[in-house]
Image 1 (cartoon, one colour):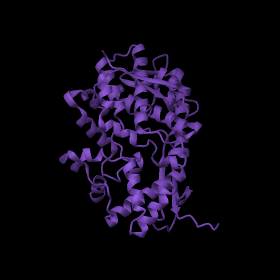
Image 2 (spheres, one colour):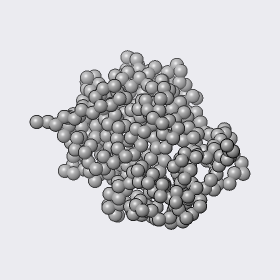
Image 3 (cartoon, helix red, strand yellow):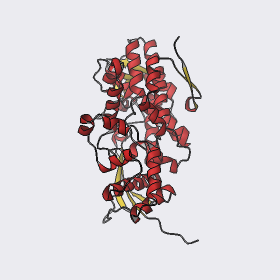
Length: 386
């Protein structure tokens, strides 16, 4: 008898149903269960208190959308075998498994390896009896049907569709709400490329605009950036002074900045990395609140008590600002659409297939390719007298 799992998901106002034994076994794997302990939006909860959702819920949500998209494409006559459908679902399910603690905040900081590479390593380790062969090739874009990879990673993939809606739901920022059902129902395939039927143009326009708004209102909110800089400077100080940590596994990653080659040569490192999550970092920071090093003690106390740096944004670089543990400068860049990436194509009824910039009346090429750059300067908040 096939085991069936029903999972409540508030984002989709209903249930996620899973009955594939391979998918269920992957979800139950310790590497995947670790995602329950990694927040989707890192330290964003310090600004939006509801943003406590995890990578685990996002990955399940993306799996749900992948199932819907595959069914839509099958109904439109696109040839997708059961093995390919399972591979695409597993690829999207595992697409974020390589993230470290607090997600993007610790990217290339705790280890010198991008999360995409770590994801491949995790997938390879979990690939017992070749059950993930198809998923890995779809994820790496080496599978013969390119559109399956685009469902996992492109400018209109199931990852982005889920995280925009999910992050909007848990932060309460309505700008991220997009017509997910409408977009999925308009998906199609033309010459092995994922496309959107003509009737879906307006929904795609809303998706692109929503993504741009969410970046500046949530993902790159100035107070979130201030919190990120505080945590990153804690990491930097711990490495500089070789501060001890009660967690031996975590300490080893601060003592050694492991590279991809290190992970390849020492497979056990991946198991060690999988033991570290948000909770370990939080416990360590609370420990460092009592450090004999005044700088580390102050930084750690400030993060735990949410005494974040002040931060200013500007459209031009800040001049003559020295970087230190308590102040510094940086820059943020965002482009809502990348013409160098796989462009979103619109399929017209007459068979023509053109880029969204040509098909849309609202989003011309100038708007889409414009990169927004903002510069920031963070510094200690002045002490107020009661």
